[in-house]
Length: 294
Image 1 (cartoon, rainbow, N blue to C red):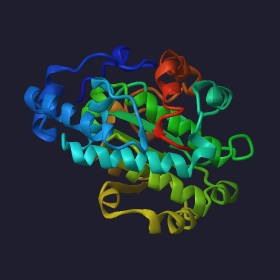
Image 2 (image 1 turned 135 degrees about the horizontal axis):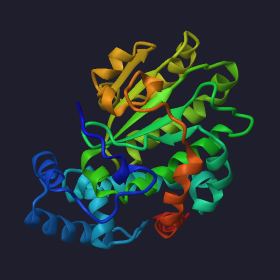
Image 3 (image 1 turned 45 degrees about the vertical axis):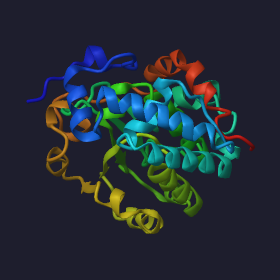
Image 4 (image 1 turned 180 degrees about the vertical axis):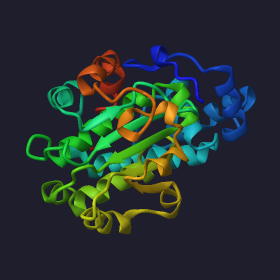
């Protein structure tokens, strides 16, 4: 059974450290060594300087986010930065100028976006996106849901443990009805999946679709054309079969909502928002980054 250190992980970001075992994962999976880190940082900094259409910070901590997700290949990290800049420019109405305060009201009132207060058995954050009955698109339109997700992903970048170990997403479609299906439009589906696959500098290790009713087939028809092979291999469909989910996520790290041994979820955005507010300066610096010209 996995050991769950909720005190360390609940409702605040793990900033400023890497566990020794996480350093080993970085070496084994990401090629990270002191020498390669220094070499790659210097090279990426030079590449960014030679790319005037980009506008990014260039301190070590910031550049490491992109080097880690690209396995310390500076050229790949530059391409990721370009993809993010292009995505931000194409979706500037949603992300240009986006700040923590802009998502405050919907974040604390809703349960659409949540994060398990403990990590999973592999030390990964588990994001929960409630796309069924807990989501009222009249109160939180799909564009606002995306903005909330976007702010969460920026804050998550600050966790070096997350940079290395990656993240897991549970998409919970319990109680999905036509009003949610209509809100998950083709344009929203394309934007969300383009973001996940091309413009998110985090390692998305697994996506679990749970409690989806038959009507979910309509959603999947919208999603499927935009899903590339790499993400497709990491998507798992469980329906109401939680034993199927447990093959990937140990029951000891899951709440009773998913037949786990942790207490049922009784927390949400209102509990997590202070952790976002603590990182306001970092999140807000992203509001202008990406393309040099909007």
